[in-house]
Image (tube, rainbow over all chains, first blue to last red; front, side, top):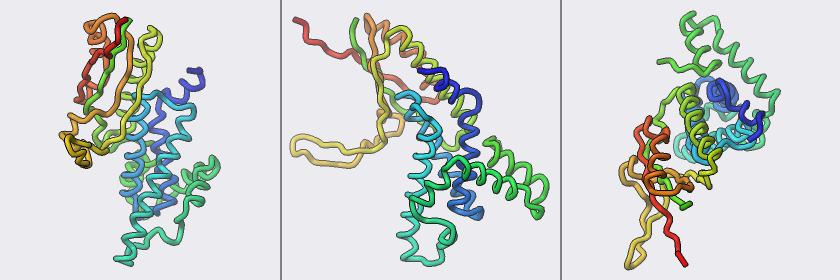
Length: 147
Length: 114
């Protein structure tokens, strides 16, 4: 295992990844679906942990995690598309996304940074009370737990 | 040296665990695996996806599963080297799975002695 490899996982890897995934997936699903975003993030992190703890950490952990998150997001969208046929009121994120190509684009480094910036603005929205701004920022931007 | 298998049951991260808690768990598993590697005791390991198919005798009836209690299901395995079952068991004692409620089954791989 190379030093760089080990370095990839030190400190706050899961927390940082959780923040990045939350920012990207919010662009996929929309801020109104933040709970769904959190579920997808959580399930991507858990999957990474469950696989890595036994097989070892892959060469590029961040890319691996993005792949998992992307696939989970696509699963959700596909399921929702099926549901749409029966209940057309579920069209919240229709306008912003849908295909694998659009989601892949969001995982480019500059797009991740852009998503995080959008998330910062969203968390600081003046209509939110200050405590909400802070707790939202700690949770979605920093990956801290609310407990 | 003999080969042994560690079968990991249960101990899956229960949602919602904080990213920080997952990080800690990950570090512990890495440290454990690294230690076994450095001692030349680790051979291989694979995680298993949950769910699958079970075929039963005599008519090869196929069911989805295993859906036994979550803690009974094998989530992955290690293949390791040790001199004796006791030594392998001692190695398994350091597994971080016990911190998340899982268990480890230690089994010797049978060899065909000449």
